[in-house]
Image (tube, rainbow, N blue to C red; front, side, top):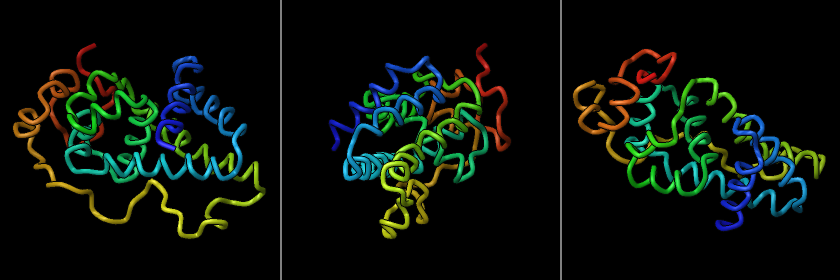
Length: 186
C-alpha cells in the first residue's frame, strides 16, 4: 500500500485549494472509491507513517515550531506532516529541522490535521456501516501509548536552537507556552 498510500495523499493535496480542510475532503472522495479492505490498508499505512515519526527528535522540532506540544498536539502535528506528502515526510523523518520548508503558519492547521487523520475511519463507516474499531478491535490508531523512540530532547532554548537552527530562525526559540502566531519571521 506504500506507493498507493502516498499517491492518494499527494493526489488529495494536489486537488485541494491549499487548505487542509479541503485536502481532507479530497482524501475522502478518493477513499470512497476504494473497497473496504483498501480503506483499511490506507488507514494502516497512515498509522505506520505516523509511527515512523513518533520520535523525540521530531517532537522537539514540533516544540520549536509551536511552543509547548502535548501528546495530542504531537499526534496532530504528525498527521499534518503526512498530509504534506511523501517528499516532505521523508525529509522530516531523516532531518527534523527540514520541516521548516513546509511552512506551518498557525495552530489552526493542526486542528484540520486531526480531521485529516480520521478520514479513513469515517469512510470505512460510510462504506461498511460499522466503526473501524468495532470491526478491528486490535487496530492501532495514531495515538500511541508508549514513549516515543530516541532520546528525549532537553527543554533548553539554547540546546534546541543548536539542534534545530533553521526552525529557530523562522519560529523563534523554544518556549514552554504555545506560540500564536507560530512564525516570528513575518
